[in-house]
Length: 78
Image (cartoon, rainbow, N blue to C red; front, side, top):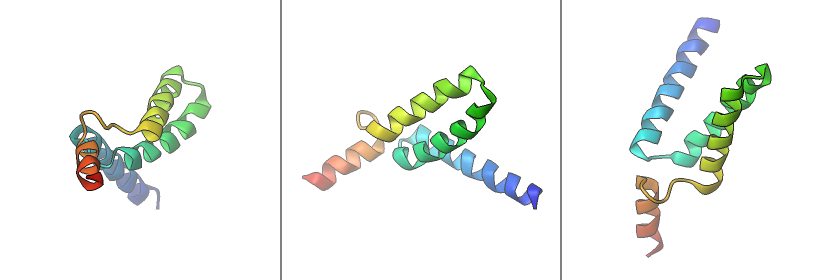
């Protein structure tokens, strides 16, 4: 059971990284990052706390300036 879950989480993390690079699903991917870094941050690694803070900023604000999400939401609002 552990090996298939490892493949699942690896695939989800890779798809999330690709989505962030393309600027798609920024807030949805940020939820994944918040959960991941909250779990790994319990080990007390400073880098994980910094990544958790960045993921929280993306979750709250999104990436509206250069992302496709922002462009699409502006078109939908008009």
